[in-house]
Image (cartoon, rainbow, N blue to C red):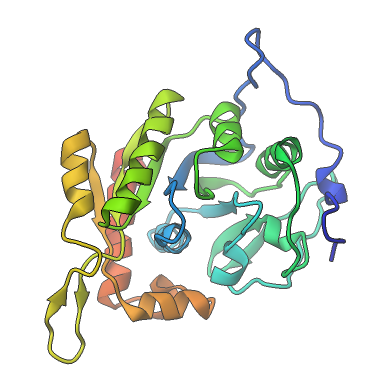
Length: 283
């Protein structure tokens, strides 16, 4: 593993980013990648990474060759979610990172390049450089879809991505709670300002159904995301229930789409992927 706080050698010598006359980076295609979709929340703790990885796994099981790129430099989750902690990627002959594979999905994360418990104490410019090279210095196989798991917020990473590559669109994840929705709206506004299509929102951790009595509990509120979508004029792509199985599967490194493929929770992720695929023109 790499020493804490040291930029990995494979991320330290990429070519300078080309800029246009306005000083902004020129948008480039990611080699071998078809559609690129950003999964964002702007608010931490709403289950965005769990949604992103289950979305990728659902896509793969629907016959779409899929990869997932963990763009959270400071707090990567994909190694844990895909049971890839402690594994390191190899390099191809051109010194590009080779993605790891889990459950039929190709994956790359800063979490593969640094010790698991070491903090990444980098300032903005270093994060921007690392992000650019994770975008363009990974040797992806031919993919129909690459899902970007974005960090919370609307800062350096989000701007670097939206200014560097063409996105097919953004999926915004939120719980029905008003506090989470406030940040989700900020995320929607950011993507609109930088010209990224909003594919829609996902209502995560919605209704909880008691396994003993079958009573429904709206712990974070009722239909907050649905109402916000109506207000903003955007699509509600899916509704993911609040269920202990989803959390347990994520912590175990075997997400629900894989762990319980015939269960109602997995089917909710499959329906979400079908809605996303229809919106961006995937089969």
